[in-house]
Amino acid sequence: MAAANFGESLKSNQNSHRCRYCTAFAKILCLDCEAYLCLGHLEPHNLAGQHILTELSTNLQTRKCATHQRLLKYNCFVDNVYVCELCVLLGIHKGHNVELISDKSKALKSSLEELVEKLIKQTAQIEQSTDKISARRDETHERATVLINQVTAMFMDLQKELENEEKKIKDEISKQVDEVDLQMSTFFLKKKGELLNLNAQVAEIESFQNSTDPITILEKGPNFINKANKVIISEMEGNVEVTGLNELLVSVNLESSLLRLVKSIPQLQKKHGFQVQNQMLTMPTNATKNNGDQLGNLLNTSVNLNKVIYSSTAISSGQHYLEVDTSDFPSWNIGVSYSRDEDCVLGDKTDSWCLRYYKMGKYAVVHNGVKTLVSTVSLIKALGIFLDYEGGNLCFLELVNPIKHLYTISVRFDYPLYIAFSMSERGILSLR
Image 1 (cartoon, rainbow, N blue to C red):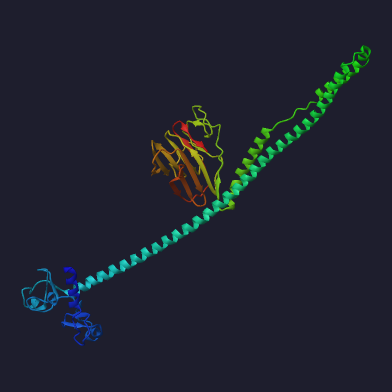
Image 2: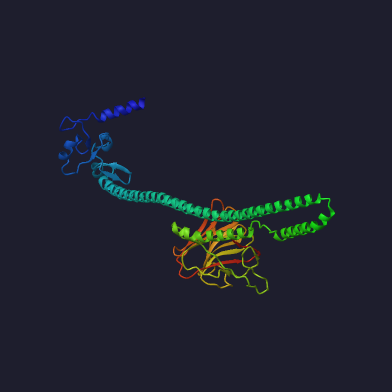
C-alpha cells in the first residue's frame, strides 16, 4: 500500500509542473534553461536543437556540479566522474584527461542505432522464417490431405480389384458346384428309373414264382432269367462316375488372380500419383568362391561371402523399393554401385554407397571410405531400401512398427546403379 501511494505521489509531482510559457502541464525538462515545457512550446524554445532535454522526473541536482552548480558537461577519466567546465578550467580536475559527455553519449547512441538496426534486421529475418514455416506447415497439411485422398482412392480401387478377383474365384467354385449338382440330379433321375425297372422285374419274377405248374415254369422261366440278366448287365455298364470339385483348377484360378493383382499394383500406384515400383532383382545362383563354397542367390539361403553380389539388372530411372531381412552376424553391406567389381568393398570408393553393419550393434552409412554412424536402439532385423534415381535419394529404413527412418543419402546419380550385397561372415540376407 505504501509503495502504491509513493508511486501515485511521484506521478502527481511529475504532472504538477507547468510550462514556462503557458498554463499547460509540462511534458519535458530543458536542463540548459532549467525550464519545464509543454509539447507546444518545445520547438520554439529549442529552434537550434542544441538544448539538453530530459524527462520530467529527472532531478536537476543530479545534473549539476555540487561545487559550482553548473551543468555537468565532461567525463573525467582520471577520477571517473562527471564534472562541469569550471572544474576542468579552474577546479581540482584541471589538467585531467576529460571528454565531453555529449560526444560520449553520441557515440553510445550511434552504437545503439546500429544495435537497433541489427535487431530490426533479425526481427525481419525471424518474421520471414516464421512466415516460411507457417507456409510450410500449411503446405504440409494440404499435401497430407492430398496424399490421404490418394491413398484412400488407391486402396478403394485395390479393394474393387480384390472384390472382382474374389468374385471370379467364388464364381468358379459355384460353377463347379452347379455342375456337380446337375450331374447328381441327372444321376438320381436315371437311377430312380432303373430302380423302378428293377423293382418291376423283381415283382414280376416273384409273381411267376407263385406258379405251381412245372411245365409253365420250365417254358417261361428261362425268359425271365434272360430278361433279368440283361437288366443287370445294362445297369452295370451304364454306371457313370460323378466328378467332385476340381480343387486344382480353383488353386490355379487363385494363383492367376493373385498374379493379376500384383501386376495391377504399379498401374494403380501410377494412376493415383505414386511412382514407387517394386524392383524385382535377379541374383546369380552359380557363383563360387575360390575355395569351392557354393554362394547361393541370397534368397533365404545361408551364404559365406567375401565377394559382392550384384543385381543382374541396372536401375537408371524411376523410384524403387525393396526389403531385406538382415543377419545378426557381422559384417554385411547393403547399397548401390555403379560398377560390378566382385572384389571391391562396398562404400570404400566413390562409385558405391551402402549401409554397413560392422560391429555388434554398430551401423554406418559408408561412401568413399567415410563412415557416418547411424543411431539405432536395437539390432536391425529388417531393412527397407528406397531409391529415387532422378531425385538423387537413397533412403534406408528400419522396418519396425512404425517404420523408422535411419538415413538418407542425397547425391546426383550419373550412371546406372546395381543393387549390391556383401557379407564377411556366415549369415543370412533374405530379400522379402
